[in-house]
Length: 254
Image 1 (tube, rainbow, N blue to C red):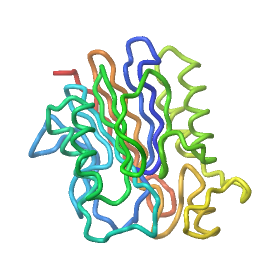
Image 2: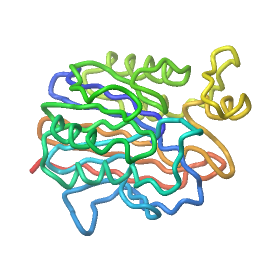
Image 3: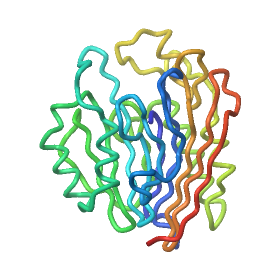
């Protein structure tokens, strides 16, 4: 997951709304979002290379997502999978704040990451490249490959569009949220961050939706946690950015 915008307790009757893009190498084996055969409570995509997931929810209203923190000089090839942090929260029963604290205790073992975990009542954020874990107050947040709400151009555009969509109707407009996630606008060079990957790569990664033959946006996801239902919509894409499949799940909370 490389871009996510989430609203916490900003709509009546809808505790959580998340819109997110997963950017990844197209060759990396992945299972589409679905209930997991070994734990049907969990509805999420699955990384078939290292295990875990980038984003998912449970039928009981738990959710989690992780993004990589871009830090090319500090990557350790044999560090544990960050996707397991999502899986372990979804399959466990720890409160969000408690889980974030547990992750912080072992955060140095991992390559850089941002983690958001929550349920209908609480949400917690932790980055092993930032400060201690913290609970998130009601509001709208945006996350990419730096710390929470770092104002990268694509994050600012997507957050603004997401905010306008939620304000325009009493219920989230799923199609409009997918449209916002599909923005392929490239940022101006003067607006680009310098994360140590070179100007050409910064340009390539500066759009919300990334199109590339080897690396790009693999899927877009909209997740809505209502008071009694949980909904997850996933759309998948080929290397040329064309549609490659979709899934949707709407379940009553257990």
